[in-house]
Length: 342
Image (cartoon, rainbow, N blue to C red):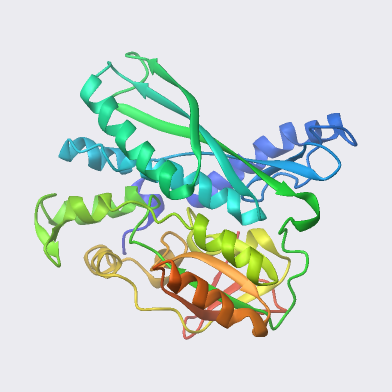
């Protein structure tokens, strides 16, 4: 029996049930400001919350953390990239509704204050903010020796969107094309499974990825797609946007009632092939856990595909059509005998 994300310690299905229970409890709060400033316009479950600011504009809000990638940083005593991941994890969600990210506040929880570690984290935050075109307007440093062993890093980004131009997936229809944007590697998802498998067979400093060590590969910062996507929104009729984050290609479920056939995916990077080989991880588990080389998806009509690809390549991001929208619910991978879903 191969390794799974659940056996490594993260049960995606149990997590989905937990989220469902939270949503049941808090969902009715959406009605409290109906028709007024602060009204929820997206419902819970999309990549970003959206609340009315006035008759024309809305605020997009996303909160997320770096996750167990921090454990790799701690092992290497290298903290100058995880701030980039924090910006990326939030900014890439904000743009999924067609919003422009504006500013981030961060939350750093520590067992004990280490000024040099804090400085390195700040370096990464500044790099990520510059790449995403946002400011960092505040944050919190919490010292919690009885709760935290090491550190945890999370944050919230706020963006702005024209209500008339929100991208909510409601215009997606069968036959539309899914364009996949290349990832920089593992990003900040599935690290619990990746660490268990890779570090069970290799030392963190073993150089097995084209001269990069295991630790360096796992710490490669999450790609930030803000510049590409904001330009694409100006040049193409975008119908759907999906961040391929935790849950892998199952994230496509979040943007439409239709299904997807992914029949031209790129070859995954070496890190994914090594995880699957060493852990005997099934194809289905790989596709529902990792991005496998596709970090973001743009859904457009056939006539806009070339525009999307050209914009991405101008920004140094590889992009290609990877599949189509289909009538039948589910995410199907060509040649595989499974359907991804929640």
